Image 1 (tube, rainbow, N blue to C red):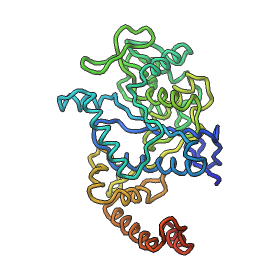
Image 2: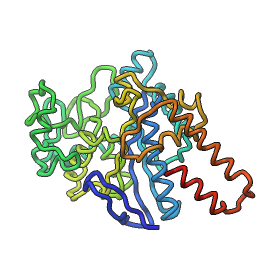
Image 3: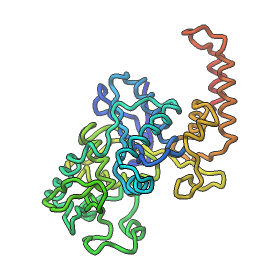
Image 4: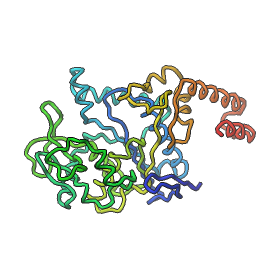
Length: 352
């Protein structure tokens, strides 16, 4: 079976040729575990679970490595733990358990490896030191910052010019930055926040910036260059753009991943992006309480994965009705028997 995948990096569909067919390597940005995941997160999980299943079918289940990370150090986590008056680890253990229950409810397989950010601090410090040594990062006021002008083709993934990116930068630029676009690799920890020994000779303890986490975890588990990197379309800039910059400049490679894949937003009924910040979302747990997980899964796959998906209760009802119809079509088939050609054609008609 020949696969062709659309890559955000090249903006075209191309034949997929793994670096090593005996070990196809995929990384997808997971979740920050401070609360229940919403159905926008759920769509990303389902989309890349489907990709994982297709790759396992084509190359064999023993020949696909799927890494999906958990971010367990973040300002939102710190704030939620303080709000609840519980230790940070207690919060992240609870919300990670919720996350696993919810994605299992949507029929997602467990990834091959599920790295946690706090287990990869040593790799993050090493990346910081490599980038400083190679002239792509610098130390300023307890921070390690990536110097964006040091990378000639920064912005290629998001297809943005430097002028466009600078226009989107915050007005209040930290005075210790050499360039407004420079971003944080490591920063000082506030009192009470998680802290580790800092890299690059910085005396005070600190913690990693967000972007460096995925470069460290992907590099450790998949190598300096791997096959596919995925995530939601909202991560293209700045997160994935910065991942590419960190990884390529630290390792001296021309790419971080050969194919970049991104799923589209879920849209609320008013046509706006569904997000926690806008308050127009429902959680995966709420979805699973209303409908079987397989109906929710089918509803999340109701449009081309990289296009926006308008979300409504009607869509979930339709997905459930479609599943019931499919079950009726296959109900008389003996266990293990191939599905009749006419039944397959009926199922394809439904999908089309």
